[in-house]
Every structure is written in structure tokens, then in C-alpha cells.
Image (cartoon, rainbow, N blue to C red; front, side, top):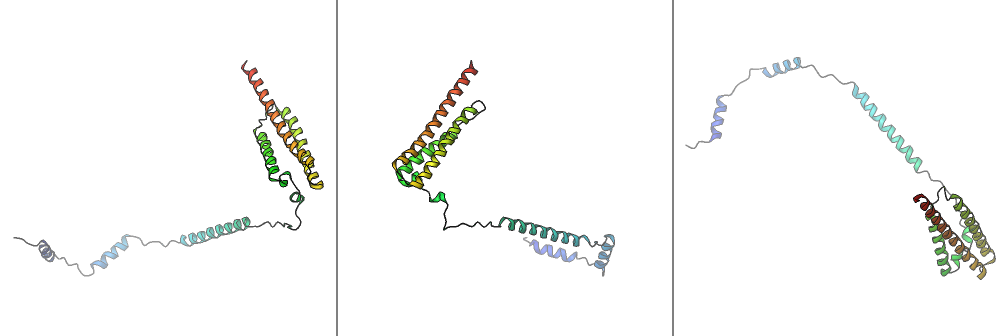
Length: 192
């Protein structure tokens, strides 16, 4: 009794075939069109396109303007044949590698001491007096460097330059000790 179901369904469909009357589809389309209004043509699409074009043009002009502003090159003329006096001058470090190490050591430690200073309203006058003396020593160091360039290197100038660096470092170390003493005295008075 094995019947093929596909064959059974084909036969059933052939029996139930419904025929539409002539012109049924056209009448249905006419009724559908009458029931639904025709789509209005949107006149705003022209304005939307124009607005988009204006926005794109504005953005591109702004980008171009900013880009041309940023890429403006300031030409600086450098005269290679006439170097400045600073580059011509001899420094303590230029005389020998050992002297360069000594100079670098003192300069690094001086800068380290300066960076560690904690200035407040209470110790400002003390720090200012030390800074004045430090400025005088720095001016003397520059004068010694000028003399080194004009006269030439000798033992007295070299030792004077090194002594100047030592004095500046010692001065800053004394200032740090005084500030620590002042701070500890203030802390003792506050705690009492």
C-alpha cells in the first residue's frame, strides 16, 4: 500500500484548479490604486542634495585652510660660515675628558641641589640671600670662562673654575642644611 505522497498532492491540485475571470488582475490593480493615493513627489530632495554639497564644500575648505596654516614653514637663515662666540669658546670640559667629568659632576650635583630646594614663605629670605651669592658665583664662572677663551688655558684658571664649581655646590649644601634645621625647629615648636 505504499503510495507516493507527491503523486497524491499533484492529483489533488489538478482537481482544485481555480480559474480567474478575464480581467480580474487589472480590476484588482485599479481598485488598489483608487484606494491608495499616488505617492507624492518629494520636492525637498533637491534641497537635501544642495545642502549636502554645501556642507561638503565647507568642510573641504576648512580642512584645506587649516592644513595650509599648519604647513607654513618659517624659514630661519643660519649662517654656517660665522659661528657664534658661544660655539667658538673653550670650556673646562673641552680641555680634557677628566676635566669634563669633573665639570659634569659638579654641574649635575648643583642642579640636583637646586631641584631639591623647598621654598616657602618662612624661608624665602634665607633662600634669596643664598641665591644672590650663587648668582655672583655663576657670574664669576662665566667671567673665568671668558678669560679662559681670551688668555688660554693655564693651571690657575682651571683650578679657579673647579673651585668656583665646588663653592657653588658647598653653598647649596649649606643652604639645604639650614633649611632642614629651620624646618626641624618649626616642627619642634609646633609639636610643643
